Image (tube, rainbow, N blue to C red; front, side):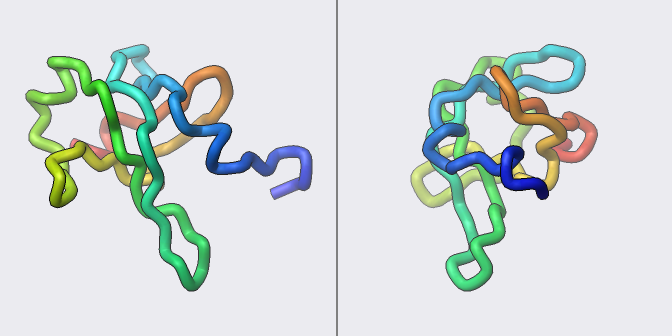
Length: 87
């Protein structure tokens, strides 16, 4: 990844999470990463939409919805995910 493409994790917090088909999922509340490698594992979703609640996605101990970071396809004004990679 080129230096200008790197993003700090705090820049992702609060971004709206949407699918490629523009379905809104919620907002980025936190990030889960592997401490040794720094690899991002999950996005912790806050303010999930009713649509997202119905999907029965993986949740953490506190009941927050987790989106695998591997499903992220673009980061800009929104965080775009490939819905087919999470359901």
